[in-house]
Image (cartoon, rainbow, N blue to C red; front, side):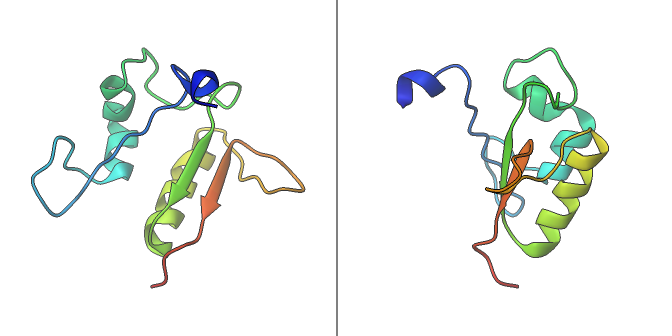
Length: 93
């Protein structure tokens, strides 16, 4: 699977409460286009024709990111209806 994902998968860690290579809210990174700059793509937004996103975090963060993704034309997917992004609900508020 690694060979298939290489060059197509980007893991972009970001933190908000400590010094790190990328200290910012993910919503801010998406809104400003910094996320795309950091991974070396020319776009400054997601492209629903080629991008896929997995979101995991607190319920509030998930809601904020989902709204941004929807505003860029991505739709939430599930096993019965694939979309451009999925949500992993592993955290409990």
